[in-house]
Image 1 (cartoon, rainbow, N blue to C red):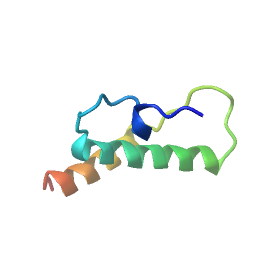
Image 2 (image 1 turned 180 degrees about the vertical axis):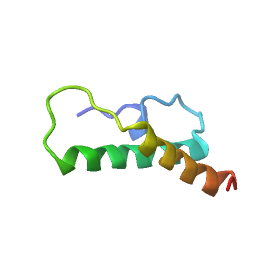
Image 3 (image 1 turned 30 degrees about the vertical axis):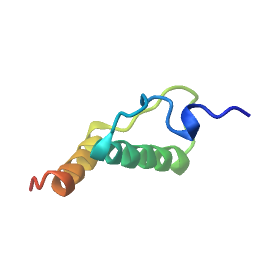
Image 4 (image 1 turned 180 degrees about the horizontal axis):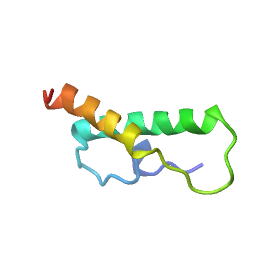
Length: 68
């Protein structure tokens, strides 16, 4: 087994701070997992619909930006 970047995410270079933006990606990953687990899907690429992504973005903005 190989550990890359000392077990940190390999898509973020050393010393780069993703800050609060990681909290925008994580809920979308969880929502996508829920979508995939809720029903059978044809093989292929799937993505959340625009409404679901907008709800996640709006929640992120309310929490991190204070946007109503």
